[in-house]
Amino acid sequence: MSRYYSYVQGNQQNTASLTGDAGEVAFHEAFLRASVGSSLAEVTRGIPAVPRIMGMQVDLDNAFVLNPLDSETRAPIPPFGVQALVEVKNIREWIYPRTQELYQVLHKAAQLQCAFPDNSFLPVLVCRRTQITTVFMAKSLGFYVIDARQHYFPEHSHIDPANLQELVSELALTDITQGNGAEQTRHTQNRLVTLQRHFDVLEAIEKWKRHAQNHAFRELLKTLNNDRITNVHRDASLNQLRRVMQQDFGAKGGW
Image (spheres, one colour):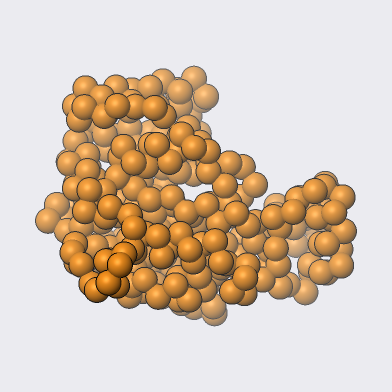
């Protein structure tokens, strides 16, 4: 495990994580291959980033204007001008409704939606794996989840492919992949195509617009995005978010 942690957390030789930007780069490559919209990302030295949306500082990993298509005719269909706001979490941990990393994109998207109520935003979380209750939560709140099914490592001089393969075999971490080729990003590409052709974008953005105007909703997302709160505080805040969704919006729950 020490070799694994030296890659993902850094060590005396590598003070920073070697996997830090690998997920963001892999997602951007998948997005370009899927051709589902117009990119809003600035790419510097191969790494995408979105510092601002509508002039407002947000520091997103990626963003794009989605071009929805009819699933049968492939003709463009409304809604038009939907800005998909993307955060990528290239981590081993599964994403649950209580996971702090989930709330980074939700908090930023809620701030943007509140600031620009007439615009259409769709939060998109990209992660290695997500738990099914997070999918139920996405349906309820109005966001989209892409589980990449891969833990991305970069092609880096400090990561020997033979050593990495030995690590994969020893620890049975079979979803670790080095690079971001077409086969390695295929599942993300498929999820992007699903978003473009089969996902009810209109329903999601209408939900998100309603929810983001609710002050209690925004404040709870802000709290749950705080990585310093205690587990007790986190669980209580998540329960409060469930109550707000049920009492103010009639959501059924299940997450």
